[in-house]
Length: 179
Image (cartoon, rainbow, N blue to C red; front, side, top):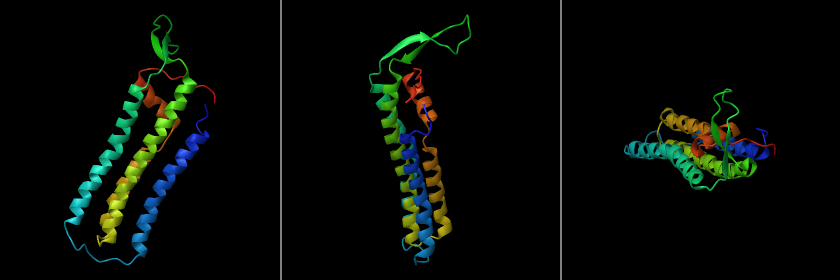
């Protein structure tokens, strides 16, 4: 299975575009005329708290959704000897009966998880953008943009990451087939 298949390329483009918007938002703060200070000093702690909550949700919610989707899926499997175990100590492992079909299902759920995580991560930067627009010094908006970029990069997709996570959740080996 190619790691650069079209579904993965498309997903990487979407994540990269979402990450790029952080630079656009931050750049706009330098160009647009804005107040020198916040009118309401409570805006920073309030929006900071909401941004932190959304940052946590950008990690927790997509992963929870992904795990619950995989755990409730009816996936045909069978037991077979583990080819990776040493001779004389063979153990059996659970393997997907139709890995190609399973991987296609995994890709759909992984796309949703990744896009949702990136979008929620981007919203942290939007809180910093709004605060900057309302007069918060640009230096103080920087943590919002950095946290956002970190969250987006943590969701950057790879097929190996998808398969490894799915194997752990499903407690079965997914043997990729050529597609």
